[in-house]
Image (cartoon, rainbow, N blue to C red; front, side):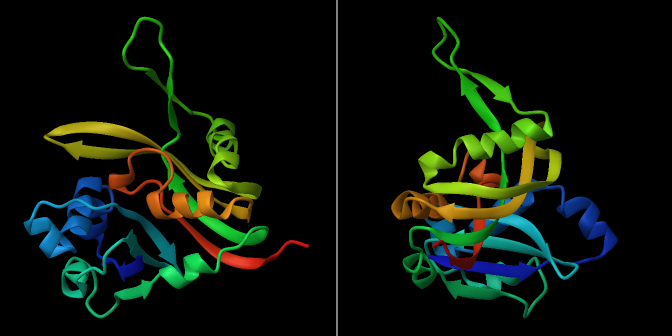
Length: 211
């Protein structure tokens, strides 16, 4: 696994168009793997837009190492950083504490009688959006100890000339690992829905081990 990031351009026109265009970033991520893209192979790639020290970045987790030229071509040349993530994953242990950040789509399917498909339940309040994450933490191998909702609202996905609002929540906090394998699974494969469009990537930084 590889964790990569590249700095985004900061001019006003670029921000106004690109930063709200999820399809643009989806295509950018896929084209960062030219061999896969050419052969129409679609492996799992998680990504999100993030900020550090007042700079904006595209962050991506992938099975394969991206082509650095393709990864940088829509960002700022010379700012890409690609790190082998396998050793970091191997160092995860039970009861270890991590600071985390995640952007996810807080929507769940609700059973509808006499229907082949469930109906979508959208978490609209801040409390429901946080509860969505906490309620699913145990089955994904972690316990949320602290969390703060830092972004809420909707993103707009434009696909096939149609606009679709996507419910979003961005949460930061502290978690404890309860089941290493389940937790690794969510780090590698993501959390929730809309993963291809910048949702579900959880990034973590170790703090300490619990006594």
